[in-house]
Amino acid sequence: MRKNNKIFGTLPLTGPEDQLGFGDDLIEAFYKLTKDERTVVMSIVDRLKPGVTSYDFDNFDLQPAVLKLLTYHRLVLHNGDKQNSVLYARWLSSVTVVDQKMTLHIDPGLHRHLERLKTHQKEDAERTGVKLASQYSIRLYEWAWKWRHVNLKRISIPKLRKVLGVDEVRDPQGNIISEKCLVHWPNLKQRAIDRALQEINEKTDLSIRLVAVGQAKYRRVLSLAFEIKEKKKKARTNGA
Image (cartoon, rainbow, N blue to C red; front, side):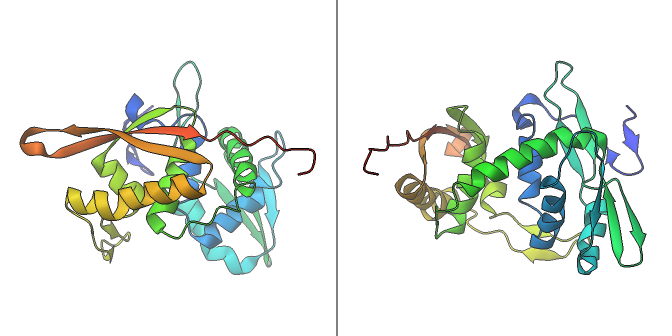
């Protein structure tokens, strides 16, 4: 693989700590898409078939979202094989337009990851009864759900800030979309993390506990470790 690529620029191979596991990195990327972009992706996911890489799409009003998936969003996906291979791709590899209809084409290597997303969406549909009020709770819950089988998960503060959506966000032109907030650790912990943990533990099927705080010199917090467990489902009685 060439280090420099006209589409991706420099392609760094992420370390083991950055790898979410097969399929999960695509799920994380999916939740960063806009509503229209997710609609386009799910139109493919709902019709996935082995060996099929082209799917008709009739909603021409969503052409801007289609083009964003084709040209803007980059995917770095770990294939979960023995070689620890990485797939660099886009959501769509190409689009064919005839009149007011489009045919969406995907990279064959993306199929296995989309199958994982399909399974996740099915599981997610079973959890739609969970209503969380805080945006921090929703974001932390979605992150923790992917790691529920790991039991203990460490995350750096910069990555956690991205998970919670409290970092500065810029558009492709460099304009600030949202300002950085909760900059200091006490505010981040009290107003975002603690409240999110309380709501998640009370209302959802996950139990999350902050078990360790990694600190550097001058008590600067660098990382956190969470214990993540899926609550046991209560057995149904005959009268249920």
